[in-house]
Length: 304
Image (cartoon, rainbow, N blue to C red; front, side, top):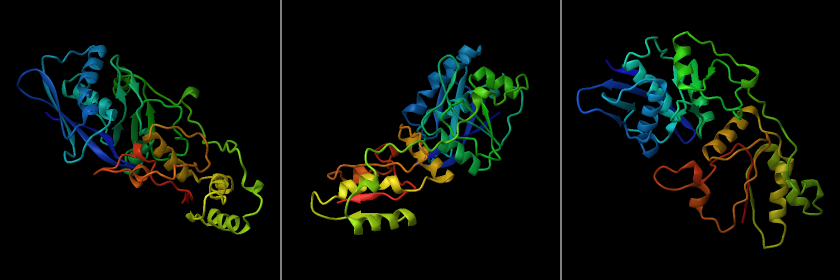
């Protein structure tokens, strides 16, 4: 019998439904992962088996095939570890309770069965909500701003054993005070210079004020030393704070890039004037977010 567990895959900020299918087949004992997995997903075989062994299950005499559907999309995150482990336990009869088709499982497994967050957790959670999931099982991450998410039950689990106990009704998990998610605070802007301290440049300052109020892009052109860099550096100090949706988008981008942002203000990026277009927007057949933080919901000056 084929067991199907759901998870979320990411392509940039766009999330899509991933169906993790697990089946025991005759043959030499092994765990085979198919469905265009990359190296991080292929290595999940060792992590998942070690976690199951720590949980008290030994499937080393079985041949298990794990299929990540849709097969035409490249899978490139250890986020599917938890879904694989739950699928194997279900296929082997160690988990008898039904798993809701409206539940998604996110998180990487350590060798002792602990569930760990990975880069891109927030965009995956937002994608799960957009795709109509009702529950998401995920590791607790205090940096995730989930307080405004409605119609999505985020169930924080710390270990594989805890997840199984909850699915079987043996354990009740709740949002204890330690699990309360933080608000996105508008901390003081960290800029050495302020827009109002600039003397002169009245026309340029007027143009930037209009751009800040209307959310327009700005292209600055002029000889070296005329004040372009100064105006661009102080421009974020007059930008309004990001809306909640824009904050989630910016935090998602920074998470995918492996960076942190703690403020609700528009971020300021200062690329070198000699940076190529590839280094600015990414390159390759499928541009990776680590090469660029992509589009952000804020006005950004381009210095020329």
